[in-house]
Image 1 (cartoon, helix red, strand yellow):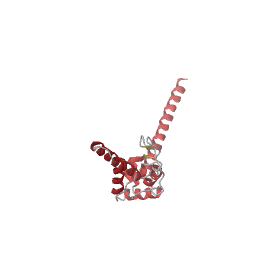
Image 2 (image 1 turned 180 degrees about the horizontal axis):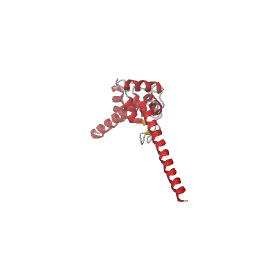
Image 3 (image 1 turned 90 degrees about the vertical axis):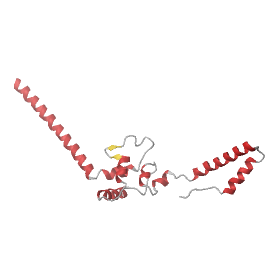
Image 4 (image 1 turned 135 degrees about the horizontal axis):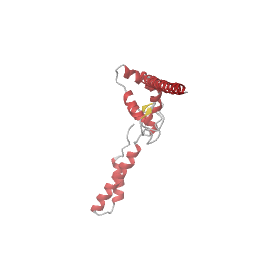
Length: 164
């Protein structure tokens, strides 16, 4: 995206119109004010919109905007996961650092608005071996907890039965 810059002649013409007939110090102040206003106005024109960032050239910047991307979707992040797994350069780990994981999103992620593009990262992350291992570990821990509760209740029942 190219930035819009004013033609020097048009800014100079505007300065001459604004400052015509002003004494020295006021003339300088008025020139500075006109130049600053022109810079502020024109710099606002070159700012990218959320939609442009979402589909721009930076996948990590796309994660940070509230506009939904059409470029950095699940197939893109699957490709990045495989590149990272193969040791090739990839933004996969940075995406996980920014978004968090599907079962532990980064705290405050939505503090500055919705981040819909992290959804694609979460979807891919859920099917990685790491996520599968975490899921299996949670299942194993839950099963162990149930077994311990059953054993505890069984011992209590046997103790009560022995008293009677």
